[in-house]
Structure formats: C-alpha cells, structure tokens
Image (cartoon, rainbow, N blue to C red; front, side, top):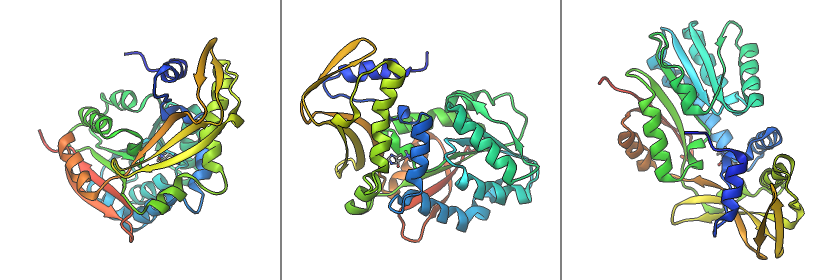
Length: 314
Ligand code: AVJ
C-alpha cells in the first residue's frame, strides 16, 4: 500500500463534511521545533512525569534485557532526553547495546542519532529513515539480539482507540519472542490540567497547530490566511480525549493545490486527538494485542504509565 501523502490527506480531509487533517503532518521541521518547545512548557506535564518514571525505574525496566546484546528501537524519538535515561542505564550494563531510531523525518532522525552518539560514546547507532512499522520489519533478518521497542511520550494517544489496537497488533506481528516494548499511556486526570497542557498561555501550542496551515501554503501552494483561524483545544470526557482544532474566524473560501474549499464562520478542522486512558485499559490493550505485561511503572501522582510488555514464547 502506498504511504499517504500530505497533499492527498489534506485534499481529502478538507472535502469531508467534518473537516480533518491527520496529526502526523504537524511535524515538519518547524512543527518539530515547536513540539520541542511544547515539551519544555511548565504546563505540558507528560514530559516531566515520564522523565520522573524513567529516572526512578530505568534499572528495573531494562533488567530483563541487561547483560547480553540488545537493540533499542526508538519510534518517535522526540528530543531524545527520555531515551537517553534508559539507554544510559542499559549501556552501562550491556556494552553491546545498539540504538536504532526510526523516523520519517530526516531532521528528527539525524538529531536523535547525533545526540545519543555524543552522549554515550561507543554506543552503536543505526538510524532507519522509514515509517515506524516498515522500519521495524526491515530489521527482520537481524541476528539474535532481542529488541526493546520504545513508544514513549503518549504517542499512542494520537491514534483513536481502535486504530491504536490495530497498530499494536501490527507491532506485535513485526516482533519475535523475547522482544520487549516500553509504551507510555497518559492517564485521565482533571480537566483543568489537561486544558492547560493543550492550550498554553504562551501560545506555543497555538503556533504548533497553526503551523499546519503555513505548511499547506508552503508545500501545497495554498492561500490560507493563518490569522483567519484560531487554535481550539477541547476535552471530551466521553472518550476521554483532548482534541485540537483549527476554527475559522469567518466565512471564507481557501485554495489548496488548485482546489477551493468553503468554510463557514466557526467551522472547525480537526487536527489532533490525544486519548487519555484509564489504567485497566493498559493491561487490556496488552492482552488484546498479544503481549504479556511484564511491568507497569507510574509517577508519584499516577498521571502517566509506562508499561513494559514482552512477546512470549510461541
Ligand atoms: C506527541 C502525541 C505525545 O498528544 O500530547 C502536544 C502532541 N499536541 N500538544 C500529545 C501534542 C499538542 C503530543 N504527542
């Protein structure tokens, strides 16, 4: 199946009665920089709580893989600071550890590879530029070293629940017995905490979301005026999830790649979902996707869970 393109996703998404653009397109070079700025915001708690978890539990998390050779596969490395906590712990005990960041973004990949190589001298680093699952599958003819696949930072939250389970099943199918997955789930918490994390008062998240329109102009020859849209973050307790939207301030027609799209005043384009989980969901997801749960690690406030899963013997 051909990978989706930015143009196809935007043109198709804007034609729908409920307009939407998949969140994967938020991360061009500027979007990735803005997301790093989000991670540094005092109100964006996921970064800090997950760092707390890894600082406290890295030796326990990496214990099943320590000793022998192991490849740490990073899906969505971000700025690498969380990965470094784990790798440092593992590399100390297992000098034959190698680091395999997988990402479609060349910039993100080069940064992750460079950072880790300079901070952990002697670490083998083998970046793969690919879609996450394709990259994992390309590792199939590897030797006998088990994998530790990292899927941190609540990236799973960007998928609707059904899609998340389908993704985890595909992930499971690309792995072998003895491989492990460390996956972060953001847990449901008070509405005001969530709201502050996804609509900060410095406007960084707003700039991150609006950058999607600038990207459309840059890459798809669009004529969208970003100032005619506002960033909206809503909490839906029934899912539960935070959602991000671009809301048109006025009735207007925009042009993208030679096509025109009408928006009513107040009409919204859906740009992101960030699902929040209840802790029992985590074990259920592991079982449904065919993993064995080995450990569950929480921060002091129980705002976030990193779950360690294993592929059992066939
Ligand atoms: C990168 C998916 C973990 O949903 O929390 C942060 C992205 N969007 N603020 C998240 C995001 C707005 C983030 N993830």
